[in-house]
Amino acid sequence: MTSYQAPYVASDYDINRHMGHYYELGFRDLYAASPHCDCMHTYKILDDEKEENYHEAFEFKCKFLGRTTSIIDERPVALSEHPAVYNQSMSWTHPQAPIPGLDDAVFNTAKFKTVPGQEQYEWVIEFTCGTQPEDFMKHMFPGGFVGLNLYSRTGPLNSTNLQEMEDTVRSLGLDWVMDDWGWGYHHVPHEMDCKYNSPDETEYACNTDTKQCEPVHWGTGVHIDECSCE
Image 1: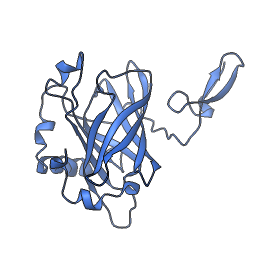
Image 2 (image 1 turned 30 degrees about the horizontal axis):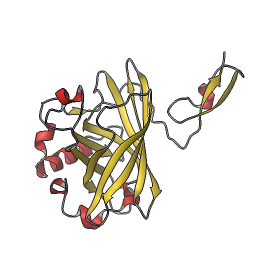
Image 3 (image 1 turned 90 degrees about the vertical axis):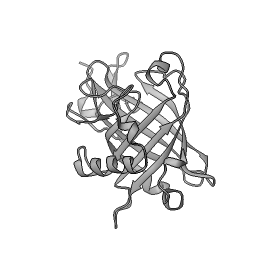
Image 4 (image 1 turned 135 degrees about the vertical axis):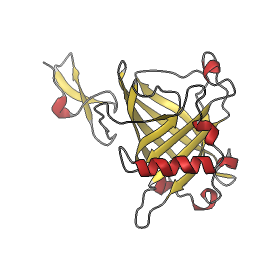
């Protein structure tokens, strides 16, 4: 995993600068791409600075499933030996969509871009490789699951950041991940009436018993102004 990580990441990585909201601009992953699904974005939220644990509130939108959300836990593999390498597990999804054989997947923060005077990284490249899938996923990833996620702080579209990240992926020897094989590598157009809902904002849904709009888990409701029991 670390062989695909830029040399400076191990010494310069700062988890606090990694946190924040990012738009996904390109990916190879388990979810469908446009025109079926769109609007991918994530909020990275620090849980424990000392242990470098954090979680993500990840969201996208699909034509048939509608809004799709998940909470993903990120735990470091070994802080001293492998900085910025994380063990990823899905702790919650809506609608529920378990991924067989991928309860745990290891990814590394392959590279990031800093901007003077800006706390959050401008973009982050994350690469996942080596987890052996089970069941139907063996046909999608016969040599083991491979994932690539290109995240940009600014967006939802940023052609400059996307080009920089794709050039960096090639410089790291990962150009094969963007080749047209298997599940494929895709750009995210962010054009399906996207909404980038923050987990800091309370969401509401109608309680059919009380006929009142009540707070619900992030990812399952709407803004209070959009909630109705009529």
